[in-house]
Image 1 (cartoon, rainbow, N blue to C red):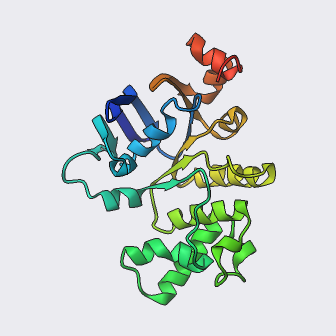
Image 2: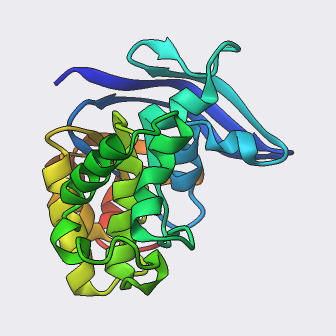
Image 3: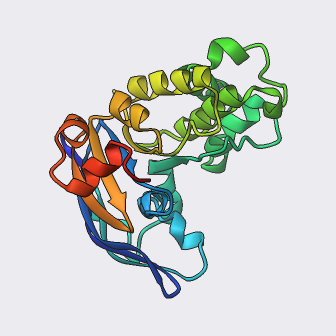
Length: 251
């Protein structure tokens, strides 16, 4: 697979606290890369570096390079709005806007200049179909998104990201607030989306990482301890700390 993201010697500081230490990693396209590790180890902070969400955090400072298709996203001339269109993010807790299902999905295209109603209708249907939600909400497009179940809300948030045609999906524990049935639906969806998108997934669920990802990275205390094929990380890790974590000896 072609390389989609390359991270070189990445350090992240929040004021005087260093959250990430010299992280370097290659992320291939059209694969699911899972990031595992204990709470507070830097997984989500790393994820937010990939579309410059940390720019919104006071006192955050990034050193190193993040290359998207060979271009450093931290160069001074980077259009951050365009970057976040290309590298979308799905958060831990479903966060639909308090408007209709339709307007949630149409929000991004409208923001980027699409006004034609027929075109918006097409985008909304395509995105909801891609998020495996169309059949459940096609008769509820004008209803409030807040009336949907938790699992439906999370798939709606995925559809909202897909509507702006990203290349990379960052998913920060997207199933942590969901029941097992909804979690299974999201995992199935991720495997379908992998055919068209590069997915980077933060998860505390070891079984989820082993089920859906092809590559896994283990973070500990802000360092990327080990990174490689998922089967190797879970069955034959090279680092004792990785082995201890995946076998539940700490974390």
